[in-house]
Amino acid sequence: MDSIVHFTTVHPRGDTRINVKEIPSLANCIEGPVSLYVQDAGGSNKKPDGTTVVDVGAQPSGRFSRMTRGAWRMYQA
Image 1: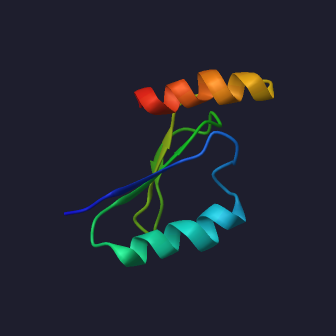
Image 2: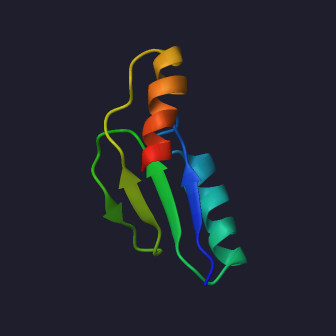
Image 3: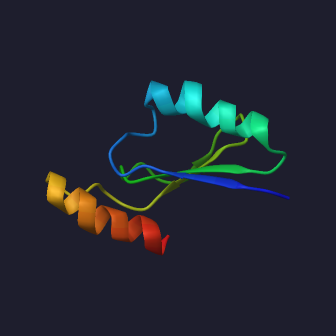
């Protein structure tokens, strides 16, 4: 079974482009689970459409920190 993991270090979990366009399109392409990894300190949960949202902690302040520390935390998750 295939699975898809979508990482975002900038967008919040409620971003329309991700939740309305990308995630449903990805979910229609495969039979397996789709996970969205965010860093917004909102906690992890499972959405009604079956998508799992995984929170890796609060977003670092500053663009450089998001690109380095944020990306590293996503990689570790």
